[in-house]
Structures are given as structure tokens and as C-alpha cells.
Image 1 (cartoon, rainbow, N blue to C red):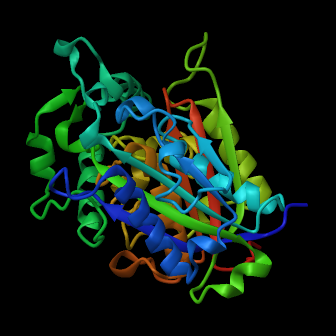
Image 2: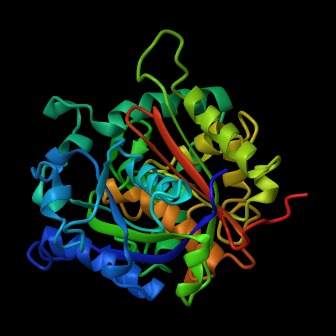
Length: 385
């Protein structure tokens, strides 16, 4: 049986306006130091480091776990590397938890990042005229198919975009602070990939995230409330095969089912208090609400429309501003897990959900084929009855 573990330290680094404000090493080290400070620990207390990021080509630094060892206090210590496309941040968090749960290490520092100002991320934003379809070009037809199936009205995407950007105004680490965001502004922004407007799409940014994960008997060393990792799951499917449902990938359904079963959740909408869901394009909020069994098929957009996913709704989603407001690709999934932990620790500040005890962190990647999810709680054994 896996031994219990918890998140006891959290740190983030927001992008800098000038490219030379922080080196790559400095970007990840700053996040790591903030997580250690939050946990009241030092690098000497860390048994191993788990590092995750999106493709090395984005910065052109191959095997960055080697060059970053010194910045992360990991010289002479084990460094584990994780890569699962856009879901890598959540996969990295889960890998750190597994290493502690297994008994291999007592305390693990896990760090993810992207410094896209030093690389070439235009592949993710390219349009048809440049010869590449980009991430949005891949997902747009699937979003259009979701709209056809569900008969969702076009303002749903605009609503998500405004909601998340308004939430971001409450989060000092959100990369985008759009003070004048509105439905009209989103609607009138340029169309990138039908039906996705510019302001329904995620940014491309620099940033890092870090967490300290430790075993039950070590939790007491840290002064702040822990976020207990109740369960986690990862699932993968091929990006292309006959009959694949790209709107509601089976791997995503399987991932959610496995996670809820492990934790003992039978009604996620009622039993989860807050969720940080990977939404790089606004329409993926209702799509993942359905794809991860929080809403019935065809009903996810109605949750958005009725305000259920707002900060004061009955199922708040992306209270931190989400991927639509911060997208250092390799760190984005961990930020979802980290912000879920913030909610149950009561450390989310102005975007705190009142009384949040159970929270979901989620990421997906590739051609909506990689999924990683965890559930954290303020209690080691919450009552879901």
C-alpha cells in the first residue's frame, strides 16, 4: 500500500519583461527557493529532484536536467526527468508523488519550466499561411465538432475567456492582466482558427513552478498546512486511429474513472470543491467537464453558461486564471496541480474558494492524447459519504 504524501511547499516564478532579467538557471532556481521557503526547508533536506518541461527544442538546451543540477542544489543527488508534451507539468507532479509514496525518497523537490523567449514557440501559434497549423489549428476542428454535437451557443467560448482573465487579475503570478477584458473584446479580437478568436487562446510565456512533496512522517517539519495527495492517474492513447473520438478521448475518460475510483469519489461535481483544468483554448472548459465525467455529455457548456464554473459558482474552475492567463508550456500542468494545492491549503489569496477541502489538478497534452490528474485535500481521509 502506498504511504501517504503531501505538498508542503509551493513556489512560482513569473516571467520577466526583459529577456535578460533572469537566466534559465535563475528562472527555475527562484521557483525552487520559494517552494523551499514555503516548506521551511533547504536544498540539504531534499532527497531527489524531479524535473519536467516540454520539448527541449523550445530552448535548444538538450538534457537540461544536467545543466540545471547546480541551480537546483542537486549535484550528487538523483535527478529524474519527465516529458509528456503539454501534460508534462502534471505528470511531473505525479511522478514526484509516486517516488515518495513508494518509499524510495522521503522528500522530493519537483520543478517544471519553460523559457520560450529563448526558443522558438511559433510552431504552437502558427497559422495556415506559415505552412503550419499549430496547436490551435489541431484543436479547432474538434472544438467545432463539440459545438455541433452539443448545440452550444457561440458565446460560451467568450464567457470562459472573460471569466479566466478576470480571475487572473486576482493572481500576482498570472502572466496576463487584462484590466479591460470583456465579451465584446473577445468577440471582436482576430479569428485565429475558426471558431477560436485571439483572446480565446492561451499566451506563450516564460515561467517556472516548484513544489516540495514529502512523506507523512516528515510533514510536521513544515509550518504551513499540507495538501494531501489523495490519488492520481495518467492515461495515454494513440493520436490517430480509426474511430478515435477527438472530442471526448477515451484516455481522458479512463483517467478520470481511475482517479475517482482510487479516491472514492462517486459524484465529482458535488464532492470536488475547486478544479484547475488545463484549458489552453476556451472551449476546452466545457469539453473537459464532460470528458472527465463532471458533466453529462452535451451539458458541460450549460455549467459555464449558468455561472457554475465561476469563482463563486458551485464548481469553480481555474480560479487562478488558468492556462488562458499563464502558459509556460512545460510548467502549465504543474501550475494546475499547484493551484489545486493552494486551494486546499487555504493559500490562494484573493482567488480562494471559501471552504475548499478537495481540489482537482488536471493537464492534457499532445493531440489531446496524454492525460494526468490528481486530487488533493486538506484532510488525509476526507469523508465523501
